[in-house]
Structures are given as C-alpha cells and as structure tokens.
Image (cartoon, rainbow, N blue to C red):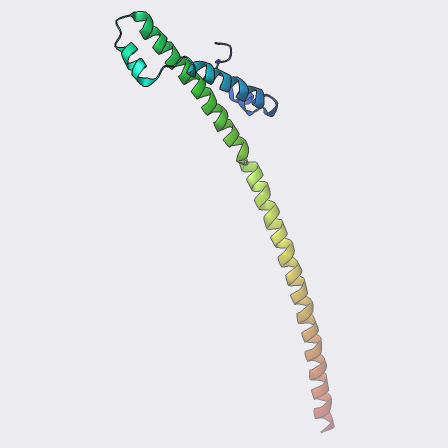
Length: 137
C-alpha cells in the first residue's frame, strides 16, 4: 500500500500517458484508506478507548486517507494546469488575433484608398470639364 501512496513529482502528474494509471492507483489508494474507516460514532468510541492499538489504527487510517486525498488533489491541480494555456500560448493566440485584425484593417484601408483615388479622378475630370466650359464662355 505504501508503494501506491508515494508522493509523485509534478512531471509525472502532468504526463498524459500515466495520468489514467495514476488516477486509478490514487482512487485505489483512497478506497483502501477509506474502507477500514468506521462510522463517526465508532471512531469516537475507539478514540476514547483505553487500548492504544485502537488509537494507532485510527491514526494510521486517518494518515492513509489524508495521503490519498493529497495525491488526488495534486492530480486534479495537474489537470487544471493542463486545461489552462501557458503564457506563451496565450501570447501566440493574441498575436494571431492581432495579425488577423491587421490584415482585415489593411484590406479596408486599401479599399478606401482605391475609392478615394476614384473620387479624385472624378473630381479632376469634373474640374477639367468646368474649366473647359468657362474657357468657352
């Protein structure tokens, strides 16, 4: 049982191949720690018992339970970290969004410039037309 309850380092928790096996072993360890636990009334009675062996059993089961709970907590914290993107990933995504926005805005500016150029040409033609009419008069 102590082999299952050794605290594992974070890289092992983050490993996707072993995460399923780790989870299963932690659930088994938690189950093993919980099975011998007695209902609260019996634990209180044993706690008041003069026999030292009862006290040791309660302490051992409580310690086993807390170790298994700690491992599950570390596992779930590891899963939570996997779900959250890293700072580099967030920056890459933000940069990609900005590049896409820049591309769209550049296209809009290009369209606006061609539109303005067309208006300038129309205005130049209209100005020339008015000048020729004025020269005739």
